[in-house]
Image (tube, rainbow, N blue to C red; front, side):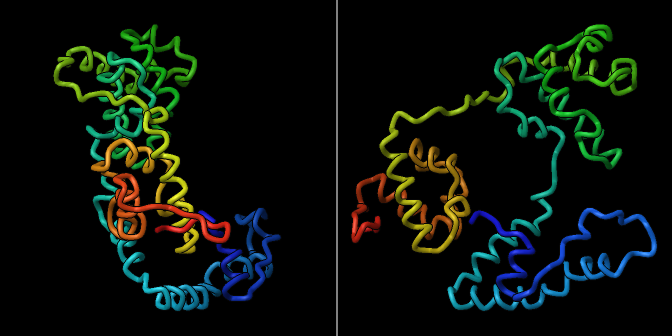
Length: 268
Protein backbone atom coordinates (compact mmCIF):
# COMPACT_ATOMS: atom_id res chain seq x y z
CA UNK A 1 0.00 0.00 0.00
CA UNK A 2 0.90 3.70 -0.07
CA UNK A 3 1.52 3.72 3.68
CA UNK A 4 1.30 1.53 6.76
CA UNK A 5 0.51 2.36 10.38
CA UNK A 6 2.70 1.57 13.37
CA UNK A 7 0.18 -0.90 14.75
CA UNK A 8 0.25 -2.90 11.51
CA UNK A 9 4.05 -2.84 11.41
CA UNK A 10 4.24 -4.06 15.00
CA UNK A 11 1.77 -6.82 14.22
CA UNK A 12 3.43 -7.96 10.97
CA UNK A 13 7.11 -7.55 11.81
CA UNK A 14 7.35 -7.84 15.61
CA UNK A 15 4.39 -10.20 16.05
CA UNK A 16 3.09 -7.85 18.74
CA UNK A 17 -0.48 -6.89 19.55
CA UNK A 18 -1.03 -3.31 20.64
CA UNK A 19 -3.99 -2.65 22.92
CA UNK A 20 -5.40 0.67 21.68
CA UNK A 21 -8.28 0.85 24.16
CA UNK A 22 -6.51 3.70 25.98
CA UNK A 23 -6.05 5.80 22.86
CA UNK A 24 -8.90 8.23 23.56
CA UNK A 25 -8.75 8.27 27.35
CA UNK A 26 -8.03 11.43 29.38
CA UNK A 27 -4.24 11.70 29.37
CA UNK A 28 -4.27 14.83 31.55
CA UNK A 29 -5.40 12.90 34.64
CA UNK A 30 -2.83 11.59 37.09
CA UNK A 31 -1.80 9.00 37.91
CA UNK A 32 -1.93 7.31 34.51
CA UNK A 33 -3.44 3.83 34.54
CA UNK A 34 -1.44 0.69 33.91
CA UNK A 35 -3.24 0.33 30.57
CA UNK A 36 -2.23 3.87 29.56
CA UNK A 37 1.37 3.28 30.53
CA UNK A 38 1.46 0.03 28.55
CA UNK A 39 -0.05 1.78 25.52
CA UNK A 40 2.49 4.63 25.73
CA UNK A 41 5.39 2.19 26.08
CA UNK A 42 4.21 0.21 23.07
CA UNK A 43 5.01 3.22 20.87
CA UNK A 44 8.72 2.51 21.35
CA UNK A 45 9.20 -1.01 22.71
CA UNK A 46 8.70 -2.67 19.31
CA UNK A 47 10.76 -0.20 17.28
CA UNK A 48 14.00 -2.21 17.52
CA UNK A 49 12.47 -5.37 16.10
CA UNK A 50 10.65 -3.41 13.38
CA UNK A 51 13.90 -1.62 12.47
CA UNK A 52 15.86 -4.87 12.26
CA UNK A 53 13.20 -6.48 10.06
CA UNK A 54 13.02 -3.51 7.69
CA UNK A 55 16.82 -3.19 7.62
CA UNK A 56 17.18 -6.88 6.69
CA UNK A 57 14.65 -6.43 3.88
CA UNK A 58 16.52 -3.36 2.59
CA UNK A 59 19.87 -5.16 2.74
CA UNK A 60 18.46 -8.13 0.86
CA UNK A 61 16.95 -5.93 -1.86
CA UNK A 62 19.96 -3.60 -2.16
CA UNK A 63 17.84 -0.52 -1.62
CA UNK A 64 19.78 1.17 1.17
CA UNK A 65 20.57 4.00 -1.25
CA UNK A 66 16.85 4.63 -1.75
CA UNK A 67 16.38 5.26 1.95
CA UNK A 68 19.52 7.40 2.15
CA UNK A 69 18.17 9.57 -0.68
CA UNK A 70 14.80 10.03 1.05
CA UNK A 71 16.45 10.79 4.40
CA UNK A 72 18.74 13.38 2.80
CA UNK A 73 15.67 15.36 1.80
CA UNK A 74 14.06 15.01 5.23
CA UNK A 75 17.24 16.03 7.08
CA UNK A 76 18.04 19.03 4.88
CA UNK A 77 17.24 22.42 6.47
CA UNK A 78 16.22 23.68 3.02
CA UNK A 79 13.25 21.29 3.09
CA UNK A 80 11.75 23.19 6.01
CA UNK A 81 12.86 26.72 5.19
CA UNK A 82 9.96 28.80 3.92
CA UNK A 83 10.80 32.21 2.53
CA UNK A 84 7.87 34.62 2.92
CA UNK A 85 8.24 35.87 -0.64
CA UNK A 86 7.64 32.30 -1.89
CA UNK A 87 4.72 31.48 0.41
CA UNK A 88 2.17 32.27 -2.32
CA UNK A 89 3.27 29.23 -4.29
CA UNK A 90 1.45 26.91 -1.89
CA UNK A 91 -1.84 28.46 -2.99
CA UNK A 92 -1.14 29.49 -6.58
CA UNK A 93 -3.38 26.72 -7.92
CA UNK A 94 -6.41 28.48 -6.43
CA UNK A 95 -5.80 31.74 -8.29
CA UNK A 96 -8.10 32.13 -11.29
CA UNK A 97 -7.42 35.69 -12.46
CA UNK A 98 -4.15 37.47 -13.15
CA UNK A 99 -5.20 40.50 -11.06
CA UNK A 100 -5.43 38.23 -7.99
CA UNK A 101 -1.80 37.14 -8.17
CA UNK A 102 -0.11 40.24 -6.69
CA UNK A 103 -2.60 40.27 -3.79
CA UNK A 104 -1.89 36.59 -3.13
CA UNK A 105 1.84 37.22 -3.17
CA UNK A 106 1.69 40.13 -0.73
CA UNK A 107 -0.89 38.72 1.69
CA UNK A 108 0.69 35.25 1.75
CA UNK A 109 4.09 36.83 2.44
CA UNK A 110 2.59 38.88 5.28
CA UNK A 111 0.99 35.77 6.81
CA UNK A 112 4.22 33.78 6.59
CA UNK A 113 6.25 36.55 8.26
CA UNK A 114 3.62 36.87 10.98
CA UNK A 115 3.54 33.11 11.60
CA UNK A 116 7.33 32.91 11.82
CA UNK A 117 7.55 35.95 14.10
CA UNK A 118 4.88 34.62 16.45
CA UNK A 119 6.09 31.01 16.04
CA UNK A 120 2.59 29.70 15.36
CA UNK A 121 1.05 27.75 12.47
CA UNK A 122 0.14 30.00 9.54
CA UNK A 123 -3.48 28.82 9.74
CA UNK A 124 -3.71 30.35 13.22
CA UNK A 125 -2.72 33.71 11.77
CA UNK A 126 -5.25 33.54 8.92
CA UNK A 127 -6.92 30.47 7.49
CA UNK A 128 -6.44 29.60 3.83
CA UNK A 129 -10.13 30.12 3.02
CA UNK A 130 -10.08 33.61 4.52
CA UNK A 131 -6.85 34.45 2.73
CA UNK A 132 -8.27 33.35 -0.62
CA UNK A 133 -11.47 35.35 -0.01
CA UNK A 134 -9.29 38.41 0.54
CA UNK A 135 -7.33 37.63 -2.62
CA UNK A 136 -10.45 37.24 -4.74
CA UNK A 137 -12.33 40.23 -3.35
CA UNK A 138 -9.36 42.56 -2.86
CA UNK A 139 -10.94 44.75 -0.12
CA UNK A 140 -9.45 48.24 0.08
CA UNK A 141 -11.18 49.44 3.27
CA UNK A 142 -11.96 48.28 6.79
CA UNK A 143 -15.65 48.07 5.89
CA UNK A 144 -15.00 45.94 2.81
CA UNK A 145 -12.74 43.62 4.78
CA UNK A 146 -15.43 43.23 7.46
CA UNK A 147 -17.93 42.07 4.82
CA UNK A 148 -15.99 38.87 4.17
CA UNK A 149 -17.72 36.08 6.09
CA UNK A 150 -14.59 33.93 6.33
CA UNK A 151 -12.65 36.67 8.16
CA UNK A 152 -12.94 36.43 11.99
CA UNK A 153 -15.08 39.01 13.77
CA UNK A 154 -13.06 42.08 14.66
CA UNK A 155 -10.14 41.11 12.42
CA UNK A 156 -10.72 44.14 10.20
CA UNK A 157 -10.00 46.57 13.08
CA UNK A 158 -7.06 44.64 14.49
CA UNK A 159 -3.39 45.28 13.79
CA UNK A 160 -3.43 42.25 11.48
CA UNK A 161 -6.38 43.65 9.56
CA UNK A 162 -4.53 46.90 8.99
CA UNK A 163 -1.45 45.06 7.80
CA UNK A 164 -3.52 42.99 5.36
CA UNK A 165 -5.02 46.16 3.90
CA UNK A 166 -1.53 47.61 3.60
CA UNK A 167 -0.41 44.45 1.79
CA UNK A 168 -3.28 44.88 -0.68
CA UNK A 169 -2.18 48.47 -1.32
CA UNK A 170 1.36 47.26 -2.01
CA UNK A 171 -0.05 44.68 -4.42
CA UNK A 172 -1.90 47.39 -6.32
CA UNK A 173 1.39 49.20 -6.92
CA UNK A 174 3.15 46.19 -8.46
CA UNK A 175 3.85 46.43 -12.18
CA UNK A 176 1.98 43.51 -13.83
CA UNK A 177 4.90 43.04 -16.21
CA UNK A 178 7.14 42.03 -13.28
CA UNK A 179 4.81 39.25 -12.08
CA UNK A 180 5.63 35.58 -12.64
CA UNK A 181 3.57 33.74 -15.20
CA UNK A 182 0.47 32.16 -13.76
CA UNK A 183 0.42 28.52 -14.77
CA UNK A 184 -2.97 27.10 -15.48
CA UNK A 185 -3.89 23.68 -14.22
CA UNK A 186 -3.19 21.06 -16.80
CA UNK A 187 -6.16 19.19 -18.09
CA UNK A 188 -5.89 15.79 -19.66
CA UNK A 189 -2.97 16.14 -22.09
CA UNK A 190 -3.56 16.02 -25.81
CA UNK A 191 -1.23 13.02 -25.92
CA UNK A 192 -3.63 11.03 -23.73
CA UNK A 193 -2.49 7.75 -25.25
CA UNK A 194 1.03 8.37 -23.92
CA UNK A 195 -0.37 9.03 -20.45
CA UNK A 196 -2.36 5.79 -20.55
CA UNK A 197 0.75 3.84 -21.56
CA UNK A 198 2.76 5.44 -18.76
CA UNK A 199 0.13 4.35 -16.26
CA UNK A 200 0.37 0.77 -17.49
CA UNK A 201 4.17 0.95 -17.31
CA UNK A 202 4.05 2.33 -13.77
CA UNK A 203 1.78 -0.50 -12.63
CA UNK A 204 4.10 -3.08 -14.20
CA UNK A 205 7.22 -1.54 -12.61
CA UNK A 206 5.54 -1.18 -9.21
CA UNK A 207 4.47 -4.82 -9.27
CA UNK A 208 7.96 -5.95 -10.23
CA UNK A 209 9.61 -3.80 -7.54
CA UNK A 210 6.96 -4.58 -4.90
CA UNK A 211 6.48 -0.85 -4.26
CA UNK A 212 3.21 1.11 -4.20
CA UNK A 213 2.85 3.01 -7.52
CA UNK A 214 2.36 6.40 -5.84
CA UNK A 215 5.71 6.03 -4.08
CA UNK A 216 7.41 5.85 -7.48
CA UNK A 217 5.36 8.41 -9.43
CA UNK A 218 2.19 10.43 -8.94
CA UNK A 219 -0.49 11.21 -11.50
CA UNK A 220 0.96 14.71 -11.84
CA UNK A 221 4.39 13.19 -12.55
CA UNK A 222 2.95 11.06 -15.34
CA UNK A 223 1.09 13.99 -16.90
CA UNK A 224 4.25 16.09 -16.80
CA UNK A 225 6.33 13.36 -18.45
CA UNK A 226 3.65 12.83 -21.11
CA UNK A 227 3.73 16.55 -21.91
CA UNK A 228 7.43 17.32 -21.46
CA UNK A 229 10.19 14.80 -20.81
CA UNK A 230 12.40 17.55 -19.36
CA UNK A 231 9.95 18.19 -16.53
CA UNK A 232 11.43 18.69 -13.07
CA UNK A 233 9.39 15.99 -11.33
CA UNK A 234 10.51 13.47 -8.66
CA UNK A 235 9.86 10.53 -11.01
CA UNK A 236 12.73 11.77 -13.20
CA UNK A 237 15.22 12.11 -10.34
CA UNK A 238 17.31 9.77 -8.21
CA UNK A 239 16.25 6.19 -7.63
CA UNK A 240 12.80 6.87 -9.12
CA UNK A 241 14.37 7.77 -12.45
CA UNK A 242 16.52 4.65 -12.24
CA UNK A 243 13.62 2.23 -11.73
CA UNK A 244 10.88 4.04 -13.68
CA UNK A 245 11.82 7.40 -15.20
CA UNK A 246 14.28 6.06 -17.76
CA UNK A 247 11.79 3.40 -18.83
CA UNK A 248 9.05 6.04 -19.11
CA UNK A 249 11.19 8.17 -21.42
CA UNK A 250 12.19 5.13 -23.46
CA UNK A 251 8.53 4.10 -23.81
CA UNK A 252 7.54 7.59 -24.88
CA UNK A 253 10.28 7.67 -27.52
CA UNK A 254 9.61 4.21 -28.92
CA UNK A 255 12.71 2.53 -27.44
CA UNK A 256 10.74 0.29 -25.08
CA UNK A 257 7.65 -1.84 -25.52
CA UNK A 258 5.05 -3.50 -23.32
CA UNK A 259 3.68 -6.96 -23.90
CA UNK A 260 1.38 -9.44 -22.21
CA UNK A 261 2.78 -12.67 -20.81
CA UNK A 262 0.46 -15.07 -19.01
CA UNK A 263 -2.01 -12.30 -18.35
CA UNK A 264 0.56 -9.87 -16.96
CA UNK A 265 2.13 -6.77 -18.47
CA UNK A 266 5.89 -7.04 -18.81
CA UNK A 267 8.48 -4.57 -20.05
CA UNK A 268 10.19 -5.60 -23.29
